[in-house]
Image 1 (cartoon, rainbow, N blue to C red):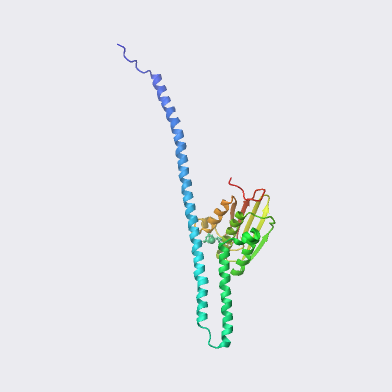
Image 2: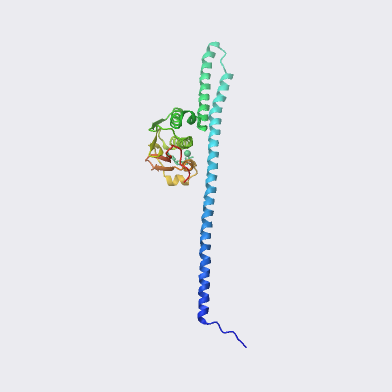
Length: 263
Ligand SMILES: Nc1ncnc2c1ncn2[C@@H]1O[C@H](COP(=O)(O)OP(=O)(O)O)[C@@H](O)[C@H]1O
Ligand SMILES: [Mg+2]
């Protein structure tokens, strides 16, 4: 009869060892896969947060336009209508009253025009990027009764796509300066350096704590950053409480002046 030989102790140790090696070989890739999946889940979550923020920003912008149309344009039209209903009986007074109402109507017309210019970037198309931005600054400063010191050292034609991004960042930064800085003076500068276009918007106002503001409910800072990222640029804010605020945007241009392709 051939009984089985008991397994020698050395071979048992070898078996255990090779089992351990095998488990390690399996565990390592599993750990990598798990780390990769966690990372992918984080990326997905931040993409979801970003698109929710962008949708919110769009809604906020619509609310602002709706409010401006309702509170400003609509109120003025209602006042105009009342003015027309209550025209004086006396013919000699009618003439001067009609002249007043005509001026009010002109005011309303320029408000609607300014609002439409803010929404639609047509000026960038027919004036070019730099002149379009300059023209927006001029109109906005007159309308808000603030001073915008605009300087540009750019002579070449800039791509429309870059221009629209710069205009939207500028609009938000200047709106922020008017709304939050407490001063009525803003400096805007556009310049071009070795293959990149640079836009800075500065106000000498009360400044803010960037960390705290980024955690807040506002979407302006997030939207500006995102707009610049889409044209592969960099976005920086320098601000200190009581120390003024500077928004600094740099967008790379390729040699033919077009925006850089995705990295
Ligand atoms: N130029 C500025 N001067 C002072 N505070 C500012 C300025 N720009 C932004 N802030 C601060 O950053 C916050 C976030 O700005 P933003 O994201 O544009 O949101 P919102 O303008 O809707 O409050 C503002 O509420 C304000 O406290
Ligand atoms: Mg804002």
